[in-house]
Image (cartoon, rainbow, N blue to C red; front, top):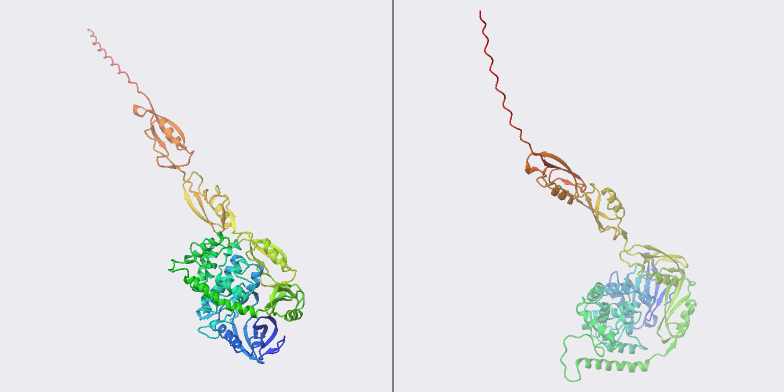
Length: 634
């Protein structure tokens, strides 16, 4: 079967370029002439085309994945045969393999979020009765929007399929569950173990178990306990330690029963980093602490996991020891076979800066399988700018070498969200981009951390073009101005212009009506926009109640009124009544009147005036009798 650019497959798919090559198939980018979209075509290697088992596995991948239409699963559109070869038409995901992202470095939050999305995809597959059995970062693609997509269901099993019999081992050793390593029956917990390894690697950048050969790694999967991730990355919380170690439990019964249970544990770990609210999983947090204190010794013995009540046992041969011995004996046969059939290790030749065809030829002549991954880069088109394993490293003959081939003088803006300004700048400069920064308020991102970039992550830009890193200034806090003493309308206008909500309460006060006499929170407080500020406004009615002082002595009345801050004016009024002397006879204003401190009030004080008695009137003199008239004689 001849595959090259420009060939049309089945009269429908025009090949654009090879995306990569794996141990089982080549993957090409193609244009679907019928639907006008780009697809990824996966072609089974010719050497497997006559192998009924491999063809069946290839067919099963198409059948299994075709029924999994989900945002976190790469969709399969079609399968067919062409010139004696077999192919699958899949959704083309423009992004990066999770393995590449882990190599570049993930934050704890990024590793948890991608793992959560992988679990959502696995949960959907498990609900459909499909177990993936080869979950690993190479089979997870992360698109330009940060969405994780599970792919490669080549060894997936639906229901009670007998395509892979018990006793055979398929998968990648570093991600195999202990039961897979022993060739035992697998189920959903086996996939969850593999996801646990992916999470461990995402958090630490290292695998929990590694070795010189697949058999060595498999033995470690069965018998050794992983050290807590926090010992490799101090940013990992005790709660996350517990979640990872439970996912990596040797006994499937001790792992999470479902992908949803795993997701719930991740959510709980983020909500409470201490791990106190993790329920049964909390026991693994204690185990993690024990491992740290023991300086890397196996937790609770040789690979033991947190246990419930002590199981009854008699003599030295417990059920657990018997199981471990049986597993080791089972693997000894594999070790012997491996020693007889082991491929020799050879040095990986250097292929950096070579053109793709020359690099592939050099690696194939050295006995390696080659996967070519097309990536935008600032090196010349069709030139290799990265290889894994690196030049000079030892690798088994026939193993896979990844080479990264430039598609031209453009580069995708990498993800820098959550990184410090320094780390974000370094990451962009590594991609040959110029860096500028600007700040923006953010409720979600801590101050000084990157919110994102402009242009956004995943967008292709010219080499050495400028990318702006947007840094968080934290929550948008505003200083509360001092509005005490202002009139209500002016104070409200100032506060609303700052983005605050104003609540007004009135109180009787000596201050003029409408004047702000109180502000809560106090002036100078740093508050979020939208915070409610309470103003207290004077009614102008005054705060002093005029007491009744009538009948009090002048001195008592003066003291009473003066204690209330009132100014006293005294008017005197005479009185002839002795009991009204030096007493307040009247007041203005009347008792109960509301006044302001300093107001003048008037009191009328009686002044006693003693009245003198008038002497009795002198008696009038009696009138003198009139003289008798004189008689005249004749």
